[in-house]
Image 1 (cartoon, each protein chain N blue to C red):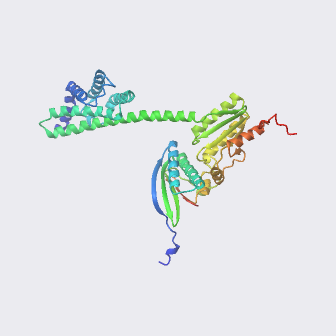
Image 2 (cartoon, one colour):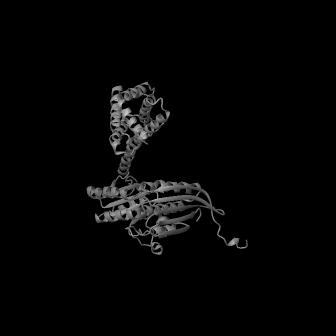
Image 3 (cartoon, one colour):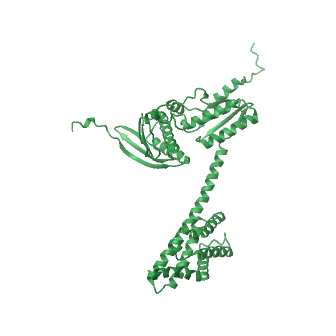
Length: 146
Length: 295
């Protein structure tokens, strides 16, 4: 009981939506859906654009390296803050060295190598879990005023 | 066991023998239906189409494939079904009408079965189930073909939209503008780049303005495409300016860590045009009124 205050407050999920992304044509509808949710909770234009750009990066990564996967859009609330949580799950090859993948300019493809580190800078919270040969899960949170 | 096998042969053979009756009954049902579209297809045509289908089906129907809807024997039938579905869609039949057309064949077949097995409910049930399943799968094929036809139209339209939405505008002698609206994916960038480079050659322009006011989000892939387009333009000996960078896009690009410092960027198309004029050493001035004498 006395240790209760140390526990991080887990956000409550208010609303959620699942979308599969398996081809390039799925990217725009997914992004529009994210925008729809962000607008609904009253997120400002700048944060909205950051979130959508982050979503776009991650979804493209998923398409490029894992041939697509599942996305989950959640409206979450923690205390007085509302936000959007996006989860990207794929069954791709996985990332062997996450530390390296999170560095600016590192790429195994021919891209700019800014996708993962850039995305981290665009969102409030960023989490990546990957098992080689099994797949990767990326979770990002953008608070309304974060 | 023996009886079971024997019975299966019986269904296929029996139906083959009753071919004429099946067609007649089917036609009768169709012609009696109030939903008959004799405005779209003449009765003779309908009969020819129906006969072709029944013919193809009964010819290949055996004891085995009756319950195996994926059997290669039905390839011809599926082909005919696909053809019927597509021509009917073109003629203006709704998918519902095409579906009902196939399902009305089931009614005819089931009536024949009923006549034949009226004293043996177990066999009747067995036979009806098999025939039902087969015709149901035929129905699904017609829908699939119908949807495939629609999807082809959508894909074609997507291509057309890509073409339409990337016009290269000659705003001044030597200055081209290219307003980009929507998302820049790889295919789109290819079209944009091709159009722009070709137009630079055609007009001998030395400045190209890429306006991204209509691009909803600039992620690293879009940025990469933009940088590539700029480099290609420079190789052609022209200068490329990117305009229409909105405040929220500017912030996002900075956070992402994309370096656009090698590219001339402007907030609006107007300022880009002004910059282009200054490169070409042109000046836009308000006309002086000659009649005013200030002294």
